[in-house]
Length: 605
Image (cartoon, rainbow, N blue to C red):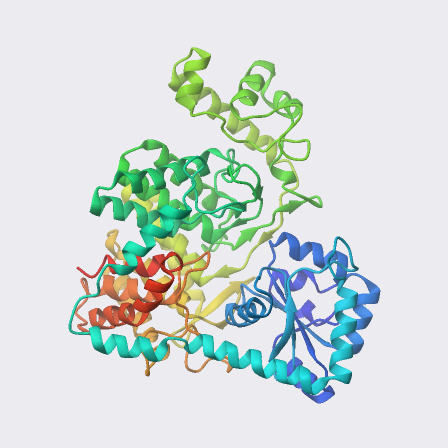
């Protein structure tokens, strides 16, 4: 049994190719079918390494009753949100407007014209724990479509109108402000507000910002380090280093293989959601590298190295690009690949070395996660060495040897699934991290990997001078987005500044010209997320605020302001500062969501 997803490239779509649901990929054919049959669309968005996407797929999309309801009453469309960030942005915002929350899997019901009228995230197949069952949701939506269609269409129109209002909110004011402040410099209002926001939400004991679940926020931490260097305020340094120390000591960090998991469900960074994403590791590697440069503490350089080594070892395609992510699950269980018992450790290391390792890395018979153990450091190693009565260097050497043996033992386990898409935007972050690390740490292998990946993107993901968004299995597809272009431009500049050939600067200029000609908002300034010739959707959005990845406008402003000092193009400074002016009111309103723009402001001098 297979559906139309069997012909797709996306690992996420292929995961659903065997469902009894008659899934179709997003495209003109599926939309035309919905119009011809006058059926509502069920749109499901997720990604290959998403744990709850797997849960809903198994529970609901393999259920024959649910498949029958979907096949009879809906046109069902499955979208890899990493392939179509443009669709994900629009329909995630729609669900957030309707429900006040979002996440993946994202489940949205649309009219045949693509207007959203109802949505949510994960639903169990049948009612439980106070949650409506997906079978009930499908029946209710179908009933509303059949018997109250004018109301449903009205709801879709109203939500679409709200999306358009949100997309344009403040644009007129922003445009007027840009004109009004053009003769003078931007002030530091958003910088002060960002600092106040972080100080209010900072957890002084465990680091991080806000309550659990806790997400690493590398852009915020990089900005704190810069703010400390500019102001000398030691509180800002303490906020950054406490967070960096706690994250690296906890279960968020893979203590054996290097690299960071997506986020932690608890306050103390112990229990992660075990998926690993390329963008997190690229951004965090830069963050720890800059912490080492700012403080001179070698531990930060070590974390940066371990993170980049993980990317080179486990996430690199033979042709040079970097894969997108790794699942949380293996053998049907979340985190199973990363968990240990004392017996397993002693079997790999021997009794004496095993007991020492268990003491240092919090491995007990009771366990700290579902009867097994997430490796984490209970105490700093210098304190542990003092308690054990040995030299810190001796302890570090013993633990390094043990980690090497355990990593080899772990390699024999069933690995989590790996999403082998190569995305331009996320690869650009990795290239930038490797280029900076190669220069700062004097590691030619990092620079070599960055060069190879840049060549791969330039040679394999361009068509007629334009970028494509992603590549897999020898095929590149999808029009690239603003963060693809701006991210690659920044990465190329980092390679050029690292002693790369002048061709790297020429490539960065070519990418930047594409941004200026195809993505610019001619009415208000700044840039749209999609190009002018992109597939028309119900909203054309601009990307001002950071998600887990830097915003498109933030990356574009950074690129333009970096270029203005090393190229002969006089218009880049004006375009970069103009972007900051357009975004200024947004930075003031939501500074904690605009750290890439705030980092760009440092480049105005």
